[in-house]
Length: 401
Ligand SMILES: *Cc1c(COP(=O)(O)O)cnc(C)c1O
Image 1 (cartoon, rainbow, N blue to C red):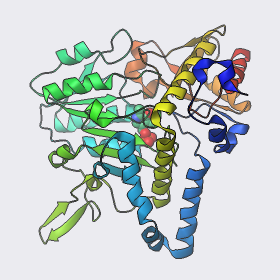
Image 2 (cartoon, rainbow, N blue to C red; image 1 turned 135 degrees about the vertical axis):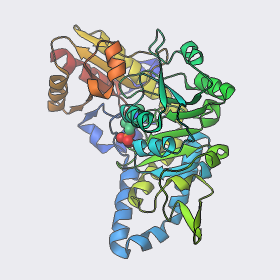
Image 3 (tube, rainbow, N blue to C red; image 1 turned 90 degrees about the vertical axis):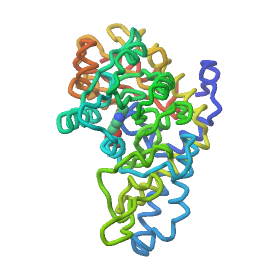
């Protein structure tokens, strides 16, 4: 189906036929779970398999030695993706550990205060709770504005002389809103606060520029909108900020044993990595970022957001269905419920028709859901390789269920 004929907003710089050809399973699967785990493009998948084969043929260390160029490219491709430099990037096995490595490194004293928003990712919030108790820190929750985003006025109001950190999630996992991260960066800069951004749902979906956002630390995962393999993630650490951090773990890769009673950390963000890691995955993630960079994040963002808003309005026109996304600015994550149908049933019935969605449940978003009187929601998340035809077929099914 030629989409540009159907809807002018759907015109894209991306060659959609090629993108779909590189994603073979989308011929018989409507994959609207890109916020959970997207589909690897063929070049990404092939690079992972190729490296595993090489390891089997020549040995793991020997395979590693043969792909040093790809390992270097990992840092460069992430540098381009984020407008950072290569030495500000670390490979970490997932976004949670990346965020943890950053958070547990922060120079905080008892009585210090951390500002966060009620849409903060569940695992981050658990770490905040754990550290607040252990280290006598205080969490100050910034409420949402009328759009459901972090309220910038309330954020400013809550800053005290003990406030040290703003920890924010760019795009919450449980909804389509995009938090105003650049405006938050302005405040963090002006007030001299550490700015830790969870970009797990934004990396690979929308444009990310750490210079514009002015964050000190940014974490993300490989398998979601970046379309990399599972078990991969990354951390960005602003160069000038590196020396203020004290990594919670150290090993022979992140540091050098320079004298009998001392060591030195790597002079770059690899001080947050560890020695043993999933090399095939790292190469796959490099290829995934290269693939995204080649398509261009501006083009990806435009297409994903257009499909997201199309899906939202199509679902909203169905009897009994309400979409639940907040935010002045929205993305490719679409959340909805249907009256009289449980989210478990919705997911199961869609799956019987080869349509993938996921569910966000209360315990993954307690503060956000309690305020909005929600218990759980169905999440359909689109990527650029999805199509209008898929949206229409999906909506027909939701209507029938
Ligand atoms: C998925 C997600 C995470 C966790 O990512 P992992 O790679 O599973 O650790 C963190 N933050 C947000 C906003 C997420 O959606």
